[in-house]
Figure 1 (tube, rainbow, N blue to C red):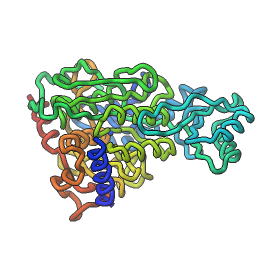
Figure 2: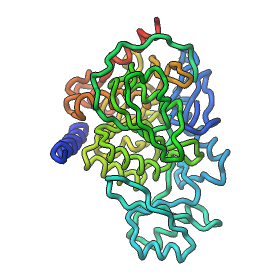
Figure 3: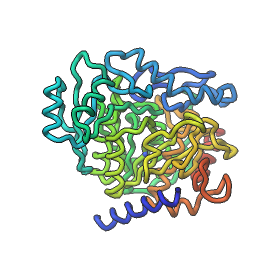
Amino acid sequence: MLFKRLLILAVAVAAASVASAQVLPGVPGVGGTVGGVLSDPLGEVEQTTRDVSRVSTRELRNARDVAARQLLRRYPNQIDTDPDGAIVVRREIVAIAPSEAALAAAQARGFTVGAAVESGDLGLNVVVLRAPANMPTRRAVELLREIDPDGAYDYNHIYLGAGDTPSIAKQARDRTGSTAGVRIGLIDSGVDADHPAFAGANIQQRGFGGEARVGAHGTAVASLIAGTQGAAPGATLYVADVYGGAPTGGGATAIVAALGWLVQSHARVINISLVGPNNRAVDAAVRAAIARGAVIVAAVGNDGPAAAPLYPASYPGVVGVTGVDARNRVLPEAGRGAQVDFAAPGSDFSAASLGRRYAAIRGTSYAAPIVTGLLARAGGNAAALANDAIDLGPRGADRTFGAGLVGQDIRDSARRLARR
């Protein structure tokens, strides 16, 4: 499975050469503490202590579900659920390439047709339909599918992403300049570009859920890509904030628009440390981005080894990343399956946090950006990165570690930094 996916990536990269990846990010007050550790909606944690032994696997796995329930409880007029319990934007339905006749039929049944979602160079026609005021979201999707059986309609699913520790005064070892000119994309919350971790990095930000707004999750992930402690220090990082402080931030339509902007900005590798259900619009956008030469890296999530696959990591051609601890054991909360392509450090080291501080982190969300940075340094060549991976599980690629561990030196240097 890994080599099939790597072949897809290699073809996409070759095509590009011929033609020329606590609190809900941006939404204050959503999140909670688990065993003395601040948690966020992807099940990630930023440690308030270096001892995380009190935090059970079950608690870590349930952190995202807790955050989803909090959002639903706090914003019942704006957030709803699909039949599987995943949170969605209330009364918003996403139509992929709808015909004029289908839109007219929807309007005749009381739906309001919104503007097309901006998709940049992806070439997608995605339209948001607003259901009548008294129509439940689930019924709205059912009705549209009845009106247009050949059409593609889905919920506007909300993807969840991913503290405070003593300040770390010194920087990690300096590799600034080794990735000058490399363009990398990030779909997450906004990033604190003034953090000292980003000295030498070029950060361009744009909001897709409102005005771009600094978030702890995006800042931590970005530092592991382009920060002085990251895998590609000094790179140009295009940050697409899909939250913007809105309760409905992180929607499928925002991710579609963000992918379009990043492809248009020529970001070669794109990090998405967010997870959610399979969504037709996101699927179409991911496929279009890969077809245009982008390499997409995503966290496999922290719902546990028996959980159903999460997306976008589980889409064909996406590089799925799991996390390991300081002993190179897979995180017990990490997802398993054919979607796992690489393992990278996901705990027992620190990343940039708000307030110009550094915080210890945990979760697959923080392993993904390490792979993103390494792939950017390798020109997007996933097969070459696989050749350098340390085989941790059964011989060859497996469903727990993928091709194996990469980026161990980044964790080790960060841990040395934390002891200074």
